[in-house]
Image (tube, rainbow, N blue to C red):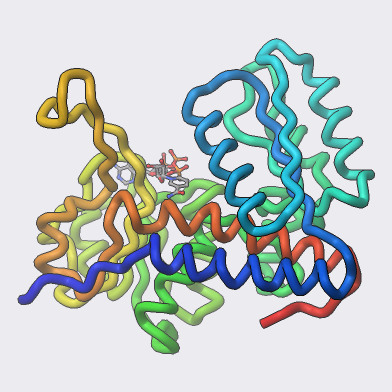
Length: 300
Ligand code: NDP
C-alpha cells in the first residue's frame, strides 16, 4: 500500500481563520460590532499560559475584541464565579472561556455551569452538551477539538461519512463523547472505545474512520489500521527528544504515525493536524455566539 495522504490541519485552520476574519469584518461594517472573547486564566500553569496567549493573538488577528483576565492561583472560588457573572452580563462579551485545569480549590463544574450557555464557546455547559446529543447542533456551541476534527474529516472524505464505521478511542467529555455525537449525526456507525475495551486492536481494525483521543504516545499501532482508513490523531504527548538536544522534547500523537501512514488512506500529523483546528473552531464559535446574541441569522 502506498503512503497515506497527509491531512494538513495547519492549512485548513488558516483557511477557516481567513473566512472568520472576513465574516467578522462584514459584521463590523454592517453592525459596528466586533465579536468579544473573554478568556479567564487562573494561576500560572505554563501550558495554559501558552494556550491563552495563542487564543488571545488569534482572536486579535481575526478582528475580535480579546479580553484577557489573569488571576492569581490563590484567587478564591467566589471571585472567579463573580468574574464569570460580570462577563455573562457584559453585552460586549459574546464568548467566555475559562482555561482548564483550574486550581484544586475551585470546583470546575460549578464555574462551567455558571457560564451562560449562549456564551459558552468551549461547548462544555450541560445545555450545550444536551443540544449536541439530541441532534440540535444548530442551537448548540460544539466543543472545539471534535468540531475541528469533523471539519478535517469532511474536507478529506466529502459527503461520504454516512454509513462508515467510526471508532473513537477515548470517552472524555471534552473530546471522545462529543466526537461520537458528531459522527453519529453524520450517520456513521460509531463505537466508543476506552481503557476497559476488550481487544482494542481488533475494534480499531474494523474502523473506516479512527479518532484517537487517548493521551498515550503512539499507543495505536500501524497494523491496527484497516487499509485505506482515515485516521484523526487528537493526541498531544510531549516526550523527551535527546536527539534535538539535552532536555528537549517533541510532540507526538496517540497513533504511531510512521507505521500508520503505510496503512491509512489519510492521516493527520502531530503537530500540524488537529491542534491548529482547535483554536480556529474557538474563533468560529465566538463569531457564531456573537451573531446569535445579536439576533442575526446563521451563516453557512
Ligand atoms: P482524557 O485523559 O480525559 O481521556 C482519555 C481517554 O482515553 C479516556 O476515556 C480513557 O479511558 C482512554 N484511555 C486511556 N488509556 C487507554 C487505553 N490504554 N486504551 C484505551 N483507552 C484508553 O484525555 P482528553 O480526551 O482530554 O485528551 C486526549 C488526548 O487529546 C490527550 O493527548 C490530549 O492532550 C489531547 N487533546 C488535544 C487537543 C487538541 O487541541 N489537539 C485538545 C484536547 C485534548 P477511561 O475513560 O476508561 O479512563
